[in-house]
Image 1 (cartoon, rainbow, N blue to C red):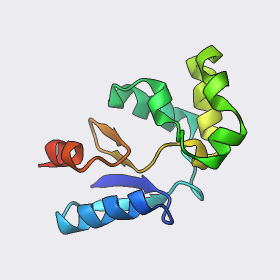
Image 2: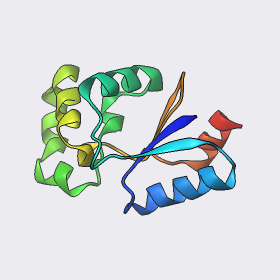
Image 3: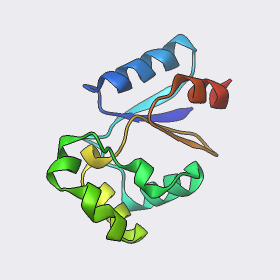
Image 4: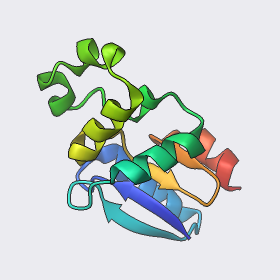
Length: 117
């Protein structure tokens, strides 16, 4: 069973959810706005994903832009970035699909299919 972390109003998240359902992939849905990931979860997911931490930021989000994070992130240490991500789920790129040994960030159908088939 995978943990599917999304913002239900997000069209990309809706597409990813539909794809999971169509492919009979079992998941537990978690609303990122009401159940924000903790710093501990984010640190673990970052390690599992193998991605740079900046890939976990929702760079197209209004909050990201209003906080001018594009200019601030390069000077921040990983610990501060994780604390910032944990402060508001709307800063986190979504959807996230968390498995035992992987984390997928954002929805790219080909990457999800490759990981899950």
